[in-house]
Image (tube, rainbow, N blue to C red; front, side):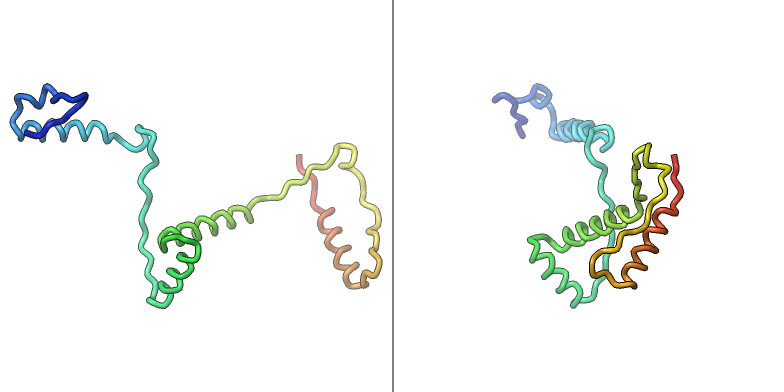
Length: 138
């Protein structure tokens, strides 16, 4: 008979049970312990995808992954997460806060730096005009 040992003794429900009843009881225990991922605090299962690469691309992927001490799957996952984070970052708006007493001021003339060409000064001037043309929002 299989022993389920806790503290060195056989569980009472195992002592006089047939093997089929034991397996049914163990299955119930396993079902109860599983629960849903959300209710048990575990992360939900991750979604698997299929990626098709020709042999040469896969060989290059393996080399890149090995260089970072990763598996090819982990390398692809990391690359996708990096790309998604970069795209999210570029979509954000830049907010500039201005002191209350400086909000209504009109900018003065742009100071020319030593040795700056006429073309470079014109480019900087145009950029500053665009930036100061953006309306303030509350």
